Length: 69
Image 1 (spheres, rainbow, N blue to C red):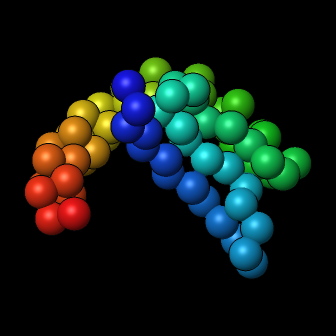
Image 2 (image 1 turned 180 degrees about the vertical axis):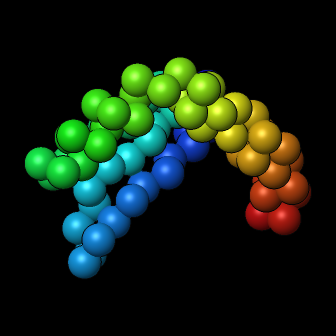
């Protein structure tokens, strides 16, 4: 549970929107980001795919990272 997958979208050094696996949805940080988050959160297949990225990417690589540390 302490492993977190974050996918951030930035423009001009400003974070506009982020998917956080602990929250389980997109969160907007700008006016455009909030609008996009509302739209993207309605797509349940996109949310499921992003949530699966935690298991696909993070959990498979955590053992490798800890062995190299």
